Amino acid sequence: MTVRVRFAPSPTGPLHIGGVRTALFNYLFAKKHNGTFILRIEDTDQSRYVEGAEDYIVESLEWCGIEIDEGYTKGGAKGPYKQSERKDIYREYAEQLINNGMAYYAFDTQEAIAERRNTYESEGKTFTYNQEERKKMTNSLTLSKDIVKEKIENGEPYVIRFKMPEGRIVEMHDIVRGSMKVNTNTLDDKVLFKSDGLPTYHLANIVDDHLMEISHVIRGEEWLPSLALHYLLYEALGWQANQPEFAHLPLLLKPTGKGKLSKRDGEKMGFPVFPLKWQDKEGGVAAGYREDGYFHEAFINMLALLGWNPGTEQEILSKTELIELFDLNKVQKAGARFDPEKAKWFNHQYLQSKPVEEITKAFSKILDEKRISCDFNMLTEIVAMVRERVNFVHELWEQTYFFFQNPESYDAKVVKKRWKNKVPEAIANIKEILAEADNWHAGDLKQKVSDYINQNELGFGAVMNGLRLSIVGGAKGPDLFKIIEIIGRDRTLERIELALEKLGN
Image (cartoon, rainbow, N blue to C red; front, side, top):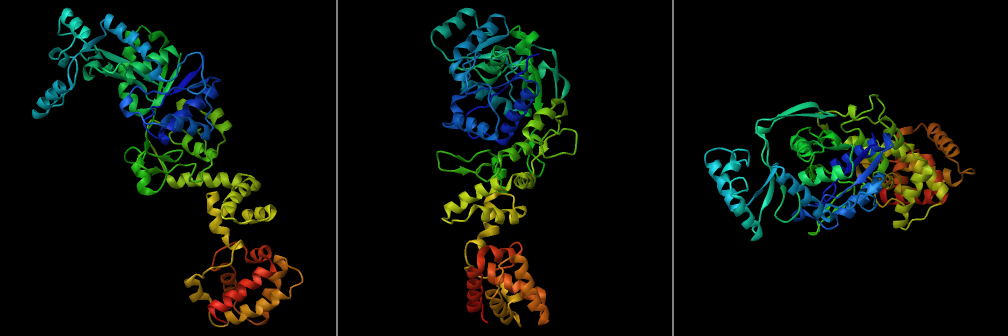
């Protein structure tokens, strides 16, 4: 079988990371089987269309490294790949279903349906437009052909509904879920074609998947309740012999494990749920993984392991490895709990594994914004000293700012604990020792200071912490004498003198 899969998002806002995972699993499956990954825009619900969402989707996939083989922005022989540009195609198949008795015209107004719903609710029941209810409504099953024709010719609004068979057991298979059965008496007559001249998802995706020769439909769990209807539509259109295989992916769950991961969870707990930053028309801004400093490789690696694993303990996997190992049969049924701390862990692992020069280049852009210049080799050495302490490139500033600027203040807790007794006097003496040092090298400088402390029987920890306080303004930083070596003699002596003046000698 030639593998052809599609990612078919709706442009109703920013792309949720659950959608990115769906795209990723489709992409990995296609690449694993030398197949084709297609991007199709499903914009049949014009009432929910959001300007800019399509470009956002494309940019998100590009950032993630999910390359489109065919489809929207790419082109191909099966286009157009935007459903609003295919609306004439769908009507033909809607009419075909009416002609073979598998669909019907429904002229019920919204007011009429609301009235029926209210009646049911007043009796403690739920209204469903199903096999029994359709017999009581205004449609081509209850009206004469002449009246139906007259209504259509007069331009009276209508929808086309699927005529759900009565009392049938639909047997289905899903790669992830296995075999399933559904009694059609539990299903309603879904709208296939709307009064605005556009199809609903149910008809459009079946028609498009057939015409685009999709071999596997890999989509979210939320579409599982629609699977029986889709099976019946393939049958009603005579396409069951070429019907694609289905795989419904598990939900992404909140960090608590209860409920679907939402934008509100990210806002409440301080993590992104979108790949890129998104700004709506009202000026609201939602965080994105790219802008928050995540490497796209780390983001993709993290997403791939939400609901799937290769069957080993290995967690760090390149895109090439993900493609080689990916198997839909290893996708889990249960929801996958999202862990924002684990996401940071993945980024940390990638930050440590990248060449230090690459990290230095990224960090140098932050220094440029701060108008700080630094020799690249020296900056590389600084980055190498501290990168194990951070998860993101932007966090390097907090770990290194003291290399580039004198302390503007001193940590009060450290001052209270360390700047007392004989420490200020010792720091003043160390200043003189450092001023006279012949070799400005970390090892030699440390030896000279250590000799002074030992000869005067001073507390090593107390003095060293006092010296660190004077150099960096607190109790942070990597090897103190490497800091001193890098910032140089003049700035070292200047900082010690500044501390003695501000904190007292």
